[in-house]
Image (tube, rainbow, N blue to C red; front, side):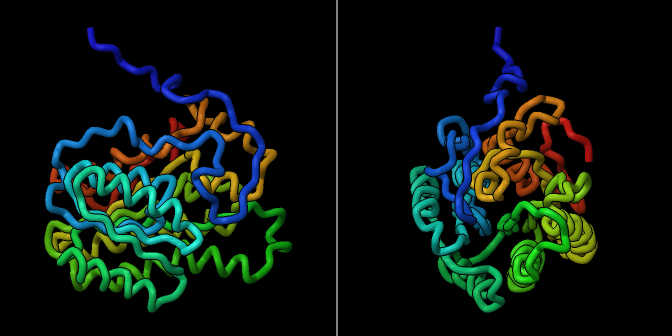
Length: 292
């Protein structure tokens, strides 16, 4: 008889040891190191001959999606900050180990010109673009909106909301029928924590962006969807500045634990694959049972 994994006990059910990192956070400094599916994800050519660009593709959810896409037959470009080079190199290694082409694109997405260059580089190296994953994000714990420096709010808005707009604007002229755009929003868009007020605001805006863009691009055969993660253990979490929250991180879900990046990747594969040809304007929750 085939054994069926219990989702409650598939990963650690307890919280995490208090720890802090300087943003954006690095994988090797995240304890325990997240599972990105390195040893478990098995592909079946669902994305054969596709060309993907993943922002924030060096670590966390982005790395898990990059590994899955490569094992499904896609060439994968990853965008990331220069200080994340070590993580990006490791992710590129996993892509190449799957037999696919990788492309590393360091830089700051808040720079409009850089967002456009990303797409130009992918087109030049891969010959086209079929899947755009808008995943890069920045968050910091807040202790009252009135205490947040304006430059911090600007960083959140520029990274989480404006950068996806610029990258999408650059990509649209190159997308053909059958292409897919996938946005990483968050449970924070629906159940916001006041300690993440500016982050939650941008993620809610991305839901509207997803639904509006799906209507705009649908007649051209381009699908636009989003994934809404719940509490997922990535370097972003210890870099958020809330070490006292980590022992309880993910404990308020129906499954009683935090999720791992590897548990997000199948949703991104599905939304990019031909099987999802009638799915557009949707937000797929991967939240451990917390409702949207």
